[in-house]
Image 1 (spheres, rainbow over the protein chains, first blue to last red):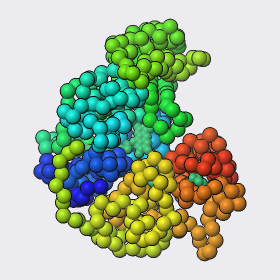
Image 2: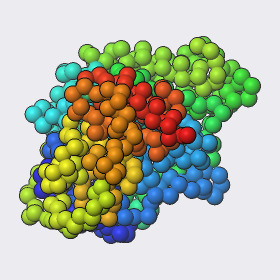
Image 3: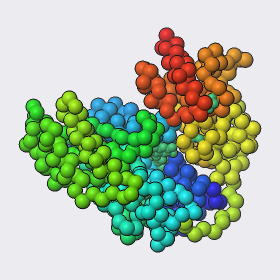
Length: 329
Length: 165
Ligand SMILES: Cc1cc2nc3c(=O)[nH]c(=O)nc-3n(C[C@H](O)[C@H](O)[C@H](O)COP(=O)(O)OP(=O)(O)OC[C@H]3O[C@@H](n4cnc5c(N)ncnc54)[C@H](O)[C@@H]3O)c2cc1C
Ligand code: SF4
Ligand code: FES
Ligand code: FES
């Protein structure tokens, strides 16, 4: 690691003003992603703002029936919290499908959302990478791109967002709450992460001077009909090749509402609201799910080593929808 | 890569209770908990496998919870209690999980073992694993290059059962 200065802050205002005023300053929460990237010199903060002393650890009910998840609640605390397990089992399962027990004990909800891509070229300083060093090129484009995006990519970056939690939050239509120099605001998950476009160095629409304080879950948690299905190279402790989060509201075998997000395929959790609507009022059956899966992959474009992902994504979508609606495969 | 100019060396005073002993230490702020344990305090039982959160060899208990000591800074834990493999035996008697690893031959080279044992103790305290499949899943953060998984899983399952009676 390169030398840096460090300060533990005790107030949100202090954290935000340090972010604004100190050159190359970064927040450290669990540290499980930031320190990893600092060791390989991919991220080189000059100043670390330790926010672990802030009171952002609570998980509590919101007026109107939703749930608030503090930015500093650990991934483990969140996944095992009775209100999350009971009302948002989709979120519990997605979190527990990620990383390891040790990492989830340290990883925080805010840090999970802002973890950076696992593109191997991003981690390797000897290669060109627009995300690491703007305008240097993208080694993955003509390199070994098996893990890379099939949707929403640009010629400047084909990386995927690695978070499992974020995929579930997208399907749940959660909002991210942040505080910056101009006060607090909440950002819908659909607008939180962004596509790479011509500036892939920017992962999200959070401003550099903003601090995530929490996540808001809406009242509907799809606890009756949900699935998180993660396909990866080994059974545990591995990032997703493709993952699917599904929440359904059903009456008998009829789907009243469907929320579906795909992970491992794009720079952000991938949702196609128009395709979700195709299921409304339809019977839960394989043919209708196939229609949705085709609509989700519309416009997909694979590279030399990840062509398999298009079919895999479609099949994982169908399988997750079958699971969520309790249909036998 | 972001441009950077080196900062002057910042040291901070921290207090850590490690295996029951209070340590008052001055640490350079970039020292990981793992490097502090191994390089400074010579507690070399905790191993460095990958230094990237990928293997679990560096697992210790931080305020009773298992974590990867390679991915956290010592300075972030002022006031905390840390238990490493060296601190598990009580009054000259091995912790039952340690003893079980020996009795059941749950290792070959032994490099992953301190991390496996600390992780198993964390798992038992968490109380989430009951079945063999759950033990395998919740121990997946500890890799064993020798592939001693079969025995490790059996030992952890047995220890779990004993902890319930
Ligand atoms: C071996 C390994 C395997 C993994 N496998 C998976 C997996 O399968 N699935 C998965 O989803 N994840 C996986 N992870 C990633 C893990 O989930 C993240 O490292 C973790 O969630 C990051 O949280 P943190 O609190 O440690 O973040 P930090 O490392 O502290 O921070 C990450 C980033 O977020 C910023 N930040 C943190 N908190 C805030 C805040 N409140 N406001 C503003 N900015 C903030 C930091 O400045 C930094 O840029 C894995 C990690 C490792 C090391
Ligand atoms: S895909 Fe994105 S992160 Fe990977 S090398 Fe290309 S620019 Fe960098
Ligand atoms: S050394 Fe920490 S996980 Fe490998
Ligand atoms: S016993 Fe050799 S690595 Fe596990």
